Length: 291
Ligand code: SF4
Ligand code: SF4
Figure 1: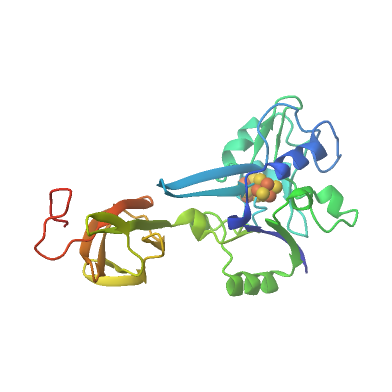
Figure 2: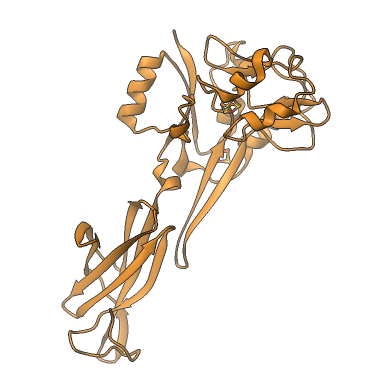
């Protein structure tokens, strides 16, 4: 049987909040009996855009992550709330607006913080995948319709086909260790979960400091080379998709104008700044020898 899934393309979100506003436009003040009570005009939104800024100037990455109810197949909220929350045959999880009335305690049952409290109606609420619209034949929820950068892709597939799609396209879910079996999938989640280390290579040539293009850069850990690259026209290099587990990494740069190396501890992305090439045995112009 076909069920709804939502694929979110992480690298495309520009933080415009159109999806948040469209969802509020759909639900604030509008009653959809059996689906959701009118959302409150004031209060938390069931769709949130998280932000992660990494690195430091001039090598900075900002990534935005839309989060909402994952419509989990093994949902902790359902286990907690009894018949106040149900899963439809098409995979969508619905908090019953009547049975859940007054149940603020339900908020704490979701490990994704996807349930918000509606103070006006005294009900817990989530993003309902716009099930009331899908049941009228719509193929896309409001968030998808309103997103200018095509972050969202609602797909209705049987579970085996969805698993194959996820595997072949590298889709991931949030907090997979919880085994909640989310139906919201993320493309390019490594942009949110991994780190980079980068730097800018320079050399002093005839009394002038210039950036160095084409320098060979290697990244290693405990003596094992993990990758290599060359600097671009601005002398910049960067290694992506690294695990920020507090490990120590080593960057070594070599070029006809000299060598330089740095150690760094990676628990978040690191911009190493300027790495000045020096010839073996020569002191650099800043008065010291590089490591
Ligand atoms: S994300 Fe939270 S609210 Fe949504 S189904 Fe999963 S546990 Fe329930
Ligand atoms: S509408 Fe699209 S680009 Fe804008 S915040 Fe939402 S997901 Fe991001």
